[in-house]
Image 1 (cartoon, rainbow, N blue to C red):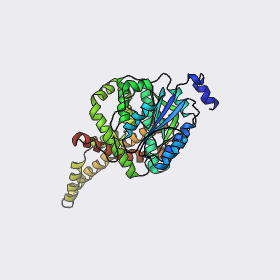
Image 2: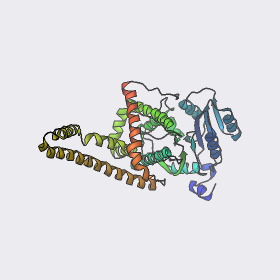
Image 3: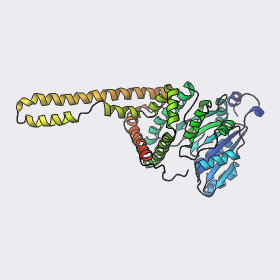
Image 4: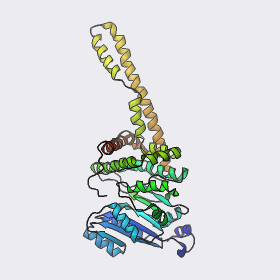
Length: 382
C-alpha cells in the first residue's frame, strides 16, 4: 500500500472494515479474470473477492480457482439477481462492493478510496469511465459524463438517491440487510436505489477513484443492451411512479436537472414539435408558386409566403443552436469537474443523433410495457 493510500484510511489495520467485493457473471471471460486478479492485488488489507458465475467457461473457472477467490458456481443460467443474492449470503464484509464482470479497475488503492469515501454514508455510487476509441465509445463517454454528474448532483444537493448504476457501487451490510435481498427485476439496481430513498439511507458519489466500463462493441449490441434497459426502466417507472412523483416533489432541484442532463433529447424533441408547424404554409407556397405561372400578380404573395417559411426555419434553428451551445458548454465544464476526458467536438452528433436514437428506443420500451404489457427481453434471465 502506498503511503497516500495508507494515510488516507487512518487507524490501524484492525480498525478497518472488512470489504467483500461481489461480482456476478455469466460464463465469464478474460476481463473477469483480470478484474479478480487486480482486486486480489489491491492494497486494502481486509478484503475478500466473491465471484458468482452462471455456466462458467471451463478455462475461466479454472483460472478463478487458481487465483483463490471465493466461487459460487451454477452450471445453469439462473440470472444476475440470483447470483447477487447467493454471493451476499456467502460474504462476511461490513462493506459490500458490487462490480459487473466487464468493468476494469486500474487503481491499486481502489478499495481503500471507496471505503474512505463511504465514511458517514450508507451507500455509494462509483464513478464510471468509458474505455475505447471507437465513435460509439466516444459517444457513450459523453453520456457517462452526464451519468456521473447526475449522480454527483444527487449526492451533493440532497444526500439521497432514487437510482444508481449497478456496474459499480458500494453499500454497508447493515444498510443492505435493512432493504432486503435484491429484487427479481430487470432493474435490480434501480429498485435498490429507490429502496435507499424510501429508507432515507445516506448516499454519496465516489469520484476519488473509478472503474473502467467497456461500451458495446457494435451498434447492434448497443441496441440490444439499450432495448433491455428501456424495457427495464419502463417497468420500473410503471411500478414506482407514485414514489417517484413524491421524490420529484421533494427534490425537484436535483431530479429535474438530472433528467435533462441525462436526456437532453427531451428538450430538442419537444422544441421541434412545439415551435412551428409549417405544413399549411408549405402547401400554400406550392399552390401560389403554381398559380403564379398563370397569374403574375401572385408572384409577390408567393415570394412572401416562401420567405416566411425560410425565416421560420431559421427561427426554429436558433433555439436548437442555443441549446447545443448550452449543453456543449455544460459538458466541457462537467468533464473538467469529474476529471474525465471531454469529447465536445462530437456533442452535435451526440445531441442530434445518439440522444434521439436513445430516446426513440426508450419510448418504444414504454409502449412495449405500458401498452403491450410485455416486460420480457431476449437473452436475459431474471
